[in-house]
Image (cartoon, rainbow, N blue to C red; front, top):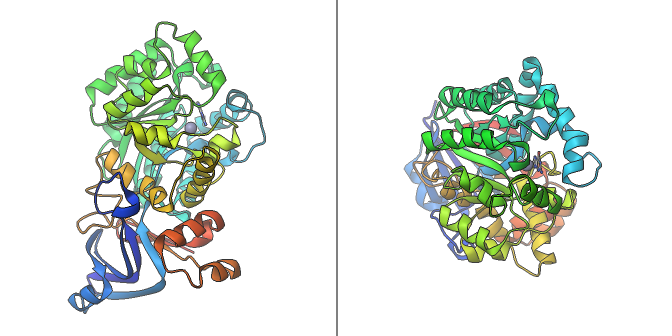
Length: 430
Ligand code: GUN
Ligand code: ZN
């Protein structure tokens, strides 16, 4: 058996960190990607590379495109089954659907049943890394890490912590949140490809005691992630002000407990003050833009220009189950429409950056994921842009990566995902 696999296809990715994705994409219309075991070993023009690997197993994917595996920077594993539930805005939706559904994850067998199904949804949509909220139950986080580990997928996840303002049968406490999170860190953080994220659900569902307990862990483990929600909904923001009267705004609640720093990822960030944008930027934290969720819950329009001008790390995210699709290309497409409504721009290459190299750079992971540079882990997606009569008509005479990605963001879904490779293994084929 040959040691190398060589893929011939169009290739587009971002080799370096950049604030200018439109001009910094590296693109080969007749490209080659070569992998050996779990790593990328070469990438470039097919004509330059093909002779170097005469014994490689050949994958002739002309007409298709290879992009880095997508990074979904905010979504909820126990909400998979409640995607697309009719409802009102955030706080009502949480009460009506979310808390009852998440309570089902008190059953370890149920967690082990749903976790692989959740992972299958990710890879079917080209997502090879997720920042994932689990439920309040430690067993659910174990099941998720186990399911990801089974296919050598890099997942960043955490047990959700909440000790007030939710049903008491779904609460932990300051002490158990700290203890169980610490145990999960020792079990999973940097074990294989797994990374841990401290996960206070959002300020309203944690007491000051719980925030303090998690803040202690944040200080004790400077390289763990932190994931939570920030400034998603106007009623939520007023509620935070009343619950934390001594804080100077919503972001400051997290700041006082040492949670605003690199590898802190804040979902939504819709209704933000200029000071909050500046603070996010200087801290090195990331804003996760979740357009399908924001439109679905009527939360508001994310202000891309504010994030850009402040210099905040930006990451696209599905936020399933308030988000309505696991597909990040489609999610970018909704982000484009949000930008349109704001009178702003969001190009397809900016979108691709925000689901690959952008978050990888923000999280300090770009030496292993987010791009197709030799030496990185072979997490990549083979896109099949022409998957039906309409896409054939639309893309017949189109040869640019930017146009192909944009058309797929509007017309595509999992039908455009031909294969998903994780650590050098094909884990999904259409
Ligand atoms: N705020 C607190 N919890 C949640 C959640 O599960 N989904 C969303 N969209 N916002 C939240
Ligand atoms: Zn969320």
